[in-house]
Amino acid sequence: MQIDSANRLRISQERYRAIFEWSRDAILLIDPEGKVMEINQSGLDLLGYKSREQLLSLRSAAELFKNREDFRRFLKTIFQDGFASEFDNLISKANGTTFNALTTASVINDHAGNTEGYVIIIRDITRQKSAQEQIKKQNVRFSTLNAISMTVSSSLNLNEILDSTIDKILELLESHSVRVYLLDKKQEMLFMAAHKGLLSDLVNKSHMRRRKVGYGHLGKAVQTIKPVVINHLEEPSNPYARPIIEAGIKTTIYIPLVSKGSPLGVMCVSSNSTLKSSQGYVEFLTAIGNLIGMAVENANLFENINSAYKRLKEAQEQVIRAEKLSSLGKLAATIAHEINNPLAAVLTYIRLMIKLVGRNRFNLKRLDDISRYLTTMETETARCGEIVKNLLAFSRQSKISIQPCDISEIIDKALLLVSHDFKIRGIKLVKQIAPDIPKFLCDFKQIQQVLLNLFSNASEAIGENGTLTVTANHIDGDFLEVMISDTGCGIPEDKLKDIFEPFFTTKEEGKGVGLGLSVVYGIVSKHKGTVTVESLPGKGSCFKIRFPLIESETSKK
Image (cartoon, rainbow, N blue to C red; front, side, top):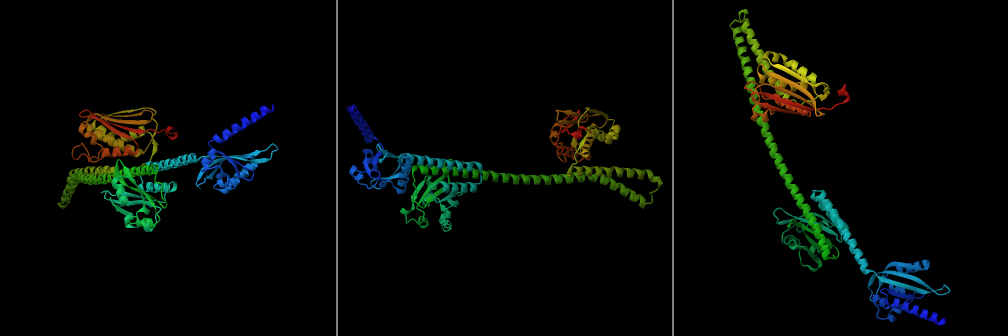
């Protein structure tokens, strides 16, 4: 029985010795005072000691900890809990260098429960730490690129984009100052467009504000379209580098700003310490440079479009001014011609009456002549008044008074005013008003003016012995439609597109100035309606007006 127990103990010791020796981690046994009593071969290799004797000569395991405060906290945790699990700290090697480690420890007790020492396991996590730092750095870079990309895509203000980009670079990257230069239109000079982190004395130097393409590292970077990494301390004789070195800048990375393969400028990222200009870091700054290049390209396109728009607007305004002058001239000529004829007739009859008075012939015998003269003068003066009234209606910009109105009532009142003219001409009137048409919102007098103008035009187009048909319907659920059809002379097809234009008329000379339908169009448009026309020469015309129909409690009453 004793032999079996001894064998088991031996086997157990051999097993633990194998684990101790073959473990990839450093395993140390220390006594209660902290002196190292034993270490495995992996521990010697990891800590850089040539022999066990060299390491065992240390006064305390505390010498392995870079920070003695870490060791004290480590021991305190062991005393309180009996173990310490994955304690993150820096471990010193024999040559004085350090590495990141996870340190685990537990207490070794004897059969009586007394502490005999401690077992400490040290694992090198330098690679994991490096990988974590790299991932963290990549996340920061991706976050920076995303923030800059969002700014570029959401704004066309180049100054805003450049300022925001520089802020992000200074906030998140290993740099102390950033400058952005843009090429002029001739691509001969670089001009500083934005900067942060530089002293004003340095910024105000002429060679810092602008640089000719090809001169210095800045000018060469835009010329070659390749990133350049410069340690300024290595070129003290360079006239461009001297003031930079004096300002405490040690390293600058010059990144070309490119869009669609063409250079647009340069971004300079500087540091007061030696930058780690790894390939990945330069590529990251190049990605930022490409985003800035895209922003510059977009801003230039926007500026070109904006300039083109302004030029187009100016040209349009010139055309409008020319059209207004042309229209004014046409108006003046038309009105002068239309008013001149009736005024000439009035003036002629006034002179005749003056002669009658001068010759003492203004008596009862000439009463019929005088009455005829006065009737003609009245007619011609009324004609002038009608012309002026239409002109005022066309030009008036008065506010409309909107009320719920009954279209049947407006039609009846407008027809009442032209009924005498229809009777004289022998024009037959057909009225077809659908029942229960809701009231609609309008200015009663203005809609009446629209109908009067259309009735008068129809009367003149018919001449004599024709038919005028007025219909009103509630259509498509939301519109009121009024149609005015006549059997008159019609409108030639090539004239239809112009009939609503001011001063355009198909009437004979002296019959109108072409403002009636313009007034109709203007009033209908103010009421958010539409007016269209269909016509066949020799058969008649049909004007169709539609108004939006908005029912309300008021309109239902």
